[in-house]
Image 1 (tube, rainbow, N blue to C red):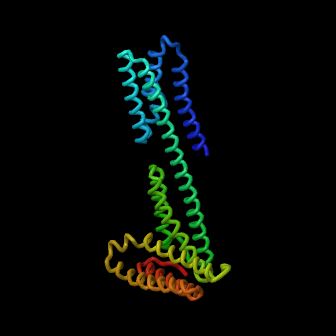
Image 2 (image 1 turned 90 degrees about the vertical axis):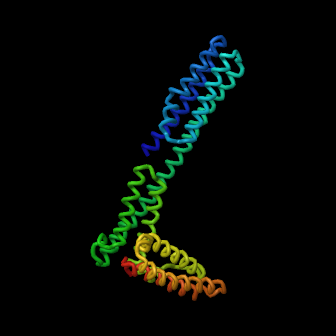
Image 3 (image 1 turned 60 degrees about the vertical axis):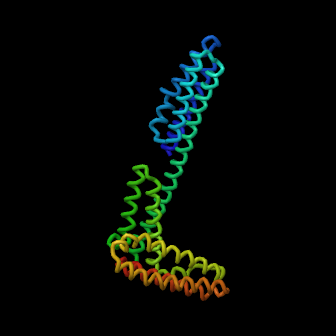
Length: 293
């Protein structure tokens, strides 16, 4: 929250800086307007806190606008030397407004970064809560230290890498790893609780609603195959073949379930989808990654 307040204050100072130069330039007497305005705009474009912030931001759009402002300022000097007051005034106004636009671009960029960081932190909180729940449920069921399971290690490795990427400012890459950790932790908890037993305790209003739930569950397990096994399969062709066989069976069952649902037999479609998801679990276990339940 403090960081957010500081960012907002910084933005306000930048805008105030631009406005200050605009007002200062407009307030000079006509006889000194040409010289004074060039000096004021030069300070804004070259030496102000806004100019320094733009240059250090790495934002290429803002940096490009500041470069445009420099070109307008140079054009104003040439016009002044040629005695073209109106053209000089036009270019000075353009240089000033272009710097103002550069500041606005920076603000928008910072707002986007702030939102990405907030979203990252919220997802991190969710994954952390899932990890704590996984550890607690594992203890309750007497399964031994959760930290010894490969699934647990994979999730925490991804969390560590995601935090490191965030600290480097690589929010998008870190968020991808966080999402992968989230999927793995979510599925792991479901199986710790006893997958099918947990599902049966849910209160579905209709077989169709349960079918759509099972579709989502099947999709989540498919994502888990990519999260957990992609690198392993890339390095081991025999594992890829073994996993592929289970996934082919899962695909056939998924296709059959969709056909059954299409004909209105949602109860049978649910059972077929459950079978499909079990094949995906077998695929994961065949790679040596134990999923309880």
